[in-house]
Image 1 (tube, helix red, strand yellow):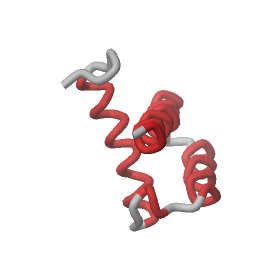
Image 2 (cartoon, rainbow, N blue to C red):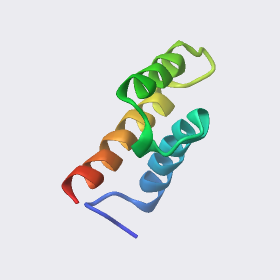
Image 3 (cartoon, rainbow, N blue to C red):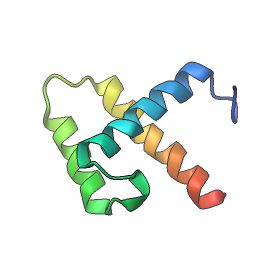
Length: 72
């Protein structure tokens, strides 16, 4: 499946990154407060084990997911 020119592997990585935020807080992403998302991203950036690529996938995945939600 290709949406908006994204490859299936890119969409999979985005979905996986966004799912980790939900699992971390044990809530749907739609039920999270912006501060919770920021706290997760800060913890991810501070984690020396997390790669910069994974951090970028998380941010881009959030942008992609939220644009789908907001733009219908």
